[in-house]
Length: 264
Image (cartoon, rainbow, N blue to C red; front, side, top):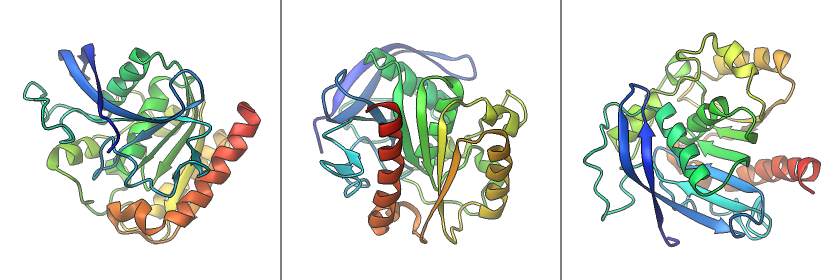
């Protein structure tokens, strides 16, 4: 594991109007120093944490798809996910934390790090859903979102309960819903300014892929910057380890094109 870094947020406002104060947030950075390169945020999965070198090995590295010669990569821990043995999170009301709360916390952390815009947010399952929530919160601050085996509204398309590191992360996963208190999901989605690169799992059995495809097809009619990609069957959070070459090739194509069009 890289060196685990820590900062303290003065406040973390939750959806239910609870205000948490002096919240310790842990994170890791990879690649070029902050402030010198485009930022890619990797949101960790149901089984993961900020040590994204494990699940993303072969996709992230020097001269890999997420090229550490070109980007600054940040991965933030959901407080209480178990990565730190020294920080106590007894004050976190775990039964109240939602995916949108986590999205708020991630943005507050980025702002504390003086990151005002993000080149790409990438995440699998839980991380992909949080990417959707983050893009809705600040539609103009994310150029690309790349959700993998994820959904913008978990309960609408979920057909099988996934494996998770703990029940806390699973409850956050079940709360993913970008339409909550906002309106129709298609209407909400079309106001996201980010390019949306959706990576499907062929024959995946966690989400109803046919229904998701219908949703994305309708969204694509309203918003042209929606692209679809497909990888072979994976087993839950063996995700990137099992099909690393497929994921690396797809992500490389996405990032190379967007880097040339928007950064180079």
